[in-house]
Length: 129
Image (cartoon, rainbow, N blue to C red; front, side):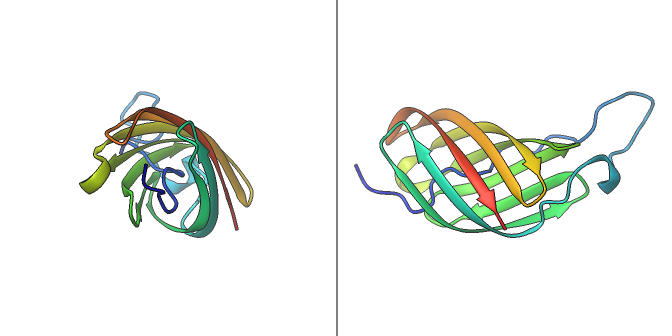
């Protein structure tokens, strides 16, 4: 099994932020701001783990990141909770979904899914600034 740099930290499904009815559009006030650079630490059920930098781009309550050697992450934030999806390509195609809690300068979460090189996979991560 090939070791993966920074494999599955915070990263998954571009969903609309907020909820609630009445034509409410999500705004940055509805969610925490996680844009910028983070240090990530992760481990998974395939006996893989690691650490490294992650840069997150955020617009409103939606965020995204590209994790080198793993895939593209998209997600949404509602208050201090995030949901995300990572779509992996190339050597280990598949999809991982997860959730996280944002608390100041830390994000803690879990994920699970199915990828070709480790099926099923689950794990946890922490992002800090």
